[in-house]
Length: 76
Figure 1 (cartoon, rainbow, N blue to C red):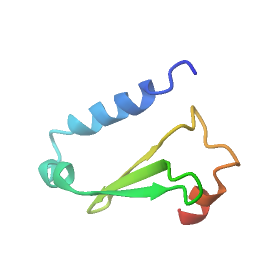
Figure 2: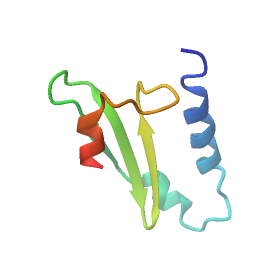
Figure 3: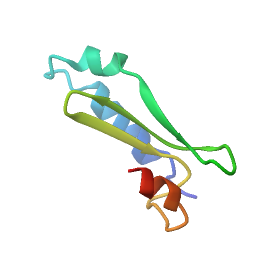
C-alpha cells in the first residue's frame, strides 16, 4: 500500500513542532489509550489526548477506515 505511513508520520512531526503551544511538553508526556481488536489481539488504533487536543492513530487502515473496523467505530 503506497504511502501507508507517510501521512501519519507527517502529522506527528507537525504536532511535535507546535512550538507556540505553551503546553506542548505536557501533551508529549501524556499517555496513549490503545484500542485492541478483541478477536485478533491486534492494536487497531490509539489516541493521545491532553486538554482539548486529541490525536488519533488508525493502524492498518490505509488512507481510509473501512467498514470492517466496526469495533473501533463503536468505541469512538
